[in-house]
Image (tube, rainbow, N blue to C red; front, side):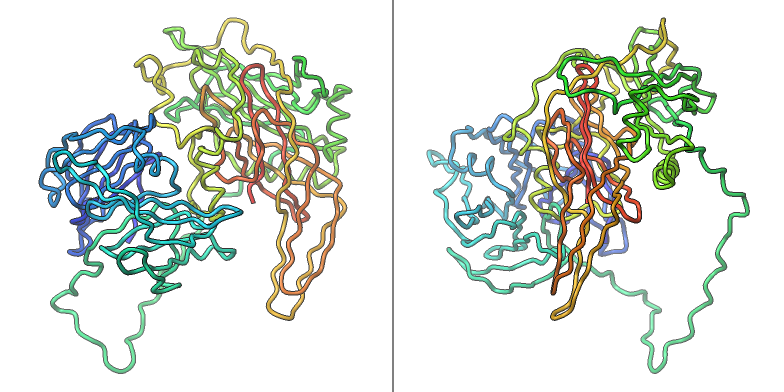
Amino acid sequence: MSTPLDTHSRFFTGGHGIISVVTGEGALKTYKDNTATGGSLLTSVRDYGGGWNNYATIVSGGAGRIFALSYTGSLDIFSVADPASGAGAITKVKTVAATNDAVIAMDGANDVWAQGSTIYTLKRGIADRLGEVRQWTYSEAAGAAPFSAATVVVSGVGTKTLTGWSPGPGTIYTVGATPDHSGVARSYTGSGLTELANGDVGSGFHGDVHADIASYLASPPADAKPIFGSAPPEEPAPQAVTDASPDPAPQNPAEFTGRFTLGNGSPAAGLPVRVEAIDITSESTVEEELTTLGTAVTAADGTWKVSLPATLPADVSQAATANGGAINAVAHLDGQTASGQIMRGTDFVMAAPASAPAAARALVTSAAEDDTPSRIRPVTEAMMQESPQPNEVQTAHSWASRGEQNSVDTLGEQPLPEYQSDTSGLPQGDPYIVKGVDTKAMEVRPMDGGCDRTKTKIIDRQIRYTAVVEGHAAWDSKATVKYDSKLSTNIEVAVKTGSNWTIEGSVTLGSAISASTATRTRARTTASSGRSRSSTRSTRKRGSATTARTRTSATGSRAVSTRSRAAEPWASTART
């Protein structure tokens, strides 16, 4: 049984079939699992209000206590009245200082969970030593320390083991990343230092896992009867409904196109758009002005279109030749509300002249099939200031970096989170609320002077490599991987809006790397598309604060490209 949660929400369990959800706005809501009686997995019980987005980690072991680790490092402990109902009062009973050994362990752990009054911390192994799971027993006895000394309950934890939970006392499950992404769980049982009980107790475990005891199957209907012998014939499948409407006309590759909307999804009509080439900057770190390729005004449905000039500027023509014939550009829209709040839209687009190779024009046409609009967003004071680039330690705390350690695609077909941070978990709150005012539905008018010209400069340079393709073969057989002489791909680009990153359009990248390899059992080939210019670090991450999902041609590869717009840096990487 599964059910979707709101974007940016987190959950934890406290036993008795109660599921607690912290929404993106920081509200704590409780739900009852009624699937055992044929009901919903999330039957609403109570809304406790906001303030819970101040905590980085929240767990409960079903003993009427909630353990909440704040972003400042201290641990708040709450009592829960009538935990079986999910509607009882929640009261803070204690705060444990950030200097406590158990709290330090929770803050530095790869995963934390609770069983009863016992806290477990999992720390994965590193290159020179294995990791371990420790347990800490919580106490509220007068004069006693809040937590007992640590006890190691699982040793030999591997470098890829990042998740753990306890379905009951004396039992611990762990899950590590595997090459086939199978999500296999291992179980340990016993008291003190536990022993491996089953190396493959189950599979398909990904993401954050919490355990509770519940009935998984409802009783059958009273009139249900068993079937003996052959099963009755199935009813014929209904006829598929066909869409008789004609296919839309394909995009002209020599045109830049896009669509802007307000924050609530309604069209952003009557606003000026400027399209500027982005691949023409030199290696200098001095600000340079981008070359304008054309302007337009958004139509009633928010769409706009700009044709390539009949004669391309020399710098744009040279950049297109180096990029396999495709021209990458950025479309900017600037406007303001009646109250004076500045709103800005950004969309990365591409086009290819008639003289470009067929592969480049095909990539442009392919990218146009994704008609996802770009939302215009409020310009805040934070965007007016150039912030320092995060270091390796800071970026290691991002949602994407933690996901990269697991190397398991936990999102599946779900979209990437709309907003991400490059130094912490998923951002909380609504970025459209500025000084207490919601700007999503506000009417946006053109600004005096239209769209400003854009200046760009290189903030940082990094080279990164990413896997292009894998060849798999069974035992004593052969796998062959081949590339043509030209590799090209479309990547989506992330733009930094204030302190958050969000995907805004795509660009195409070409290279001239070719490779061929054949091997027995398994082959993995890695290629680079050349230099990466990045305002932050470029790594192969899905859901990264600097992420781009790729759309690869038949001869495809994955590549990296970055630029920055004045004090508003953006960067992108390829996702495999």
